[in-house]
Length: 153
View 1 (tube, rainbow, N blue to C red):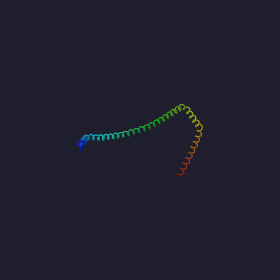
View 2 (view 1 turned 120 degrees about the vertical axis):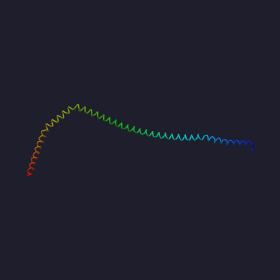
View 3 (view 1 turned 60 degrees about the horizontal axis):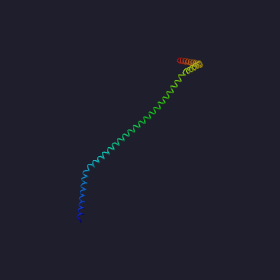
View 4 (view 1 turned 45 degrees about the vertical axis):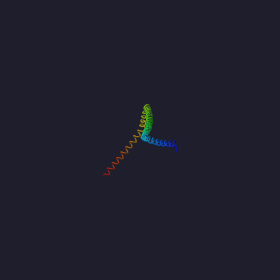
């Protein structure tokens, strides 16, 4: 073999050994950095999971609050409708009372006239009926009293 060929094989061999030695040295120097990168990735992943869970919890709370807000809106709407109905009823009652106040004199005159007419026409008939019933009751009581006194003897 020629000397140039041998020298180039030696140079290649020394280069390979030197390259492997530099690679090992570089790996020893970079190993702490790679370990730090790995720990940092783990830490970042843990933080991402933590904040994702926190976000989920906050979203659930927001959803619950929104549900309560919707429920409160429905209750408020129902109460407003009832208040409107109450207001309408109060207005109608007020109108009716005003109408009654305006026409109360006519009503009381009509009621008094009807009462007077009924007493005038029905009064004597009722008095006659009452008198007849009273006489019948008195007669029955007298007969009972007489029957009781004759039976005890």
